[in-house]
Length: 397
Image 1 (cartoon, rainbow, N blue to C red):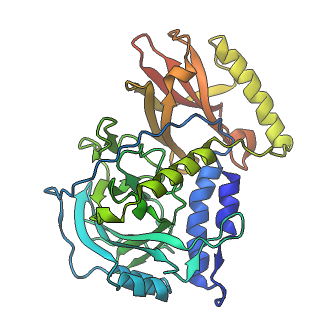
Image 2: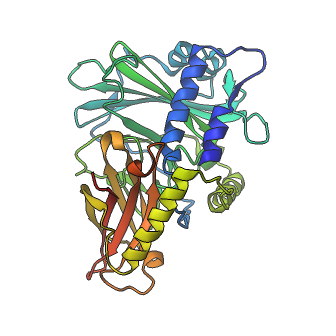
Image 3: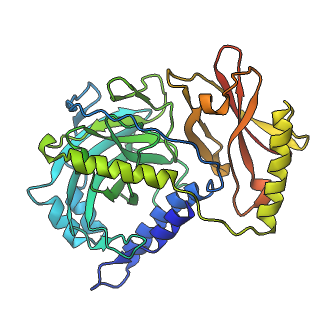
């Protein structure tokens, strides 16, 4: 994750321009998401398997969808506000896909405005670790507003960020918790105008998956929430969890399936898998790291014996019972506000090969610059009925 953060911070303008206010804002938003992930960079890695289905996706507009009002900025106007003339021209070109579909959930009105893909269609292009400009990009724009008409907080207001939203693409046939914005080389820019929040996403060219089907999801929180959507492993379809209770809009991009490139898509997935499984570079350990490593060694040793370290306490709001699917994978999610949030898969069969009820295992841990006082440890306990109980532990306060 540190390498990903470094990569974002090394992004550069195309040569003829000097950095301006928008570029700085764009990098900050991308860096903020990467830093959220980087705070969890000391987690232990789990194996990720991809279930790939090549069936085409049919566009279905449900009862929640209505035509977006003309008062919204167009994707081209959004690009203009962000001082990106090339992208504005691209959104006004023949290859742009204008959607203007609105869904309303949990007091918010979400509108998918449109998308466009192409080479060198932005003034601001990222640079990879080898110094190569990533010029083949996919862009999509959404609008978020309150259904009662009250304005969204401006980016300069103290209340900004108190109502976070996670906006991400998803691909039919691929687990949404593994294949979202971050793994697709994405970032975003955001601003508020006339009380409406506009977000522009940029990522690697995912048109190569057009024959499979591409979704755009907008959900509450700062990370993927496993409760927001349902993934059908048999069909590869992703659907809304109707009982979620918070924002979980889900749109289907009406892309031309002919744009799909199965060979390129498979090559991309192989590359991504290799990157996910790559060994982390050795990390220099300072006194803070060494203190936490020593504490974790004792914590895990006692956990193996069925005990919790005396100076650790369970955060009750994170406790949840999770049921694994047929492949032994369960999902968890929690939100601790300013203390962080998390979600992801639990590989039950790998954690508990002996299938002994009552066994406890650490699946992840993370900490920030706050040192051991910021340490959070994710613990999973195997239950008699095959379910697992997930909980986050920290030092007693």
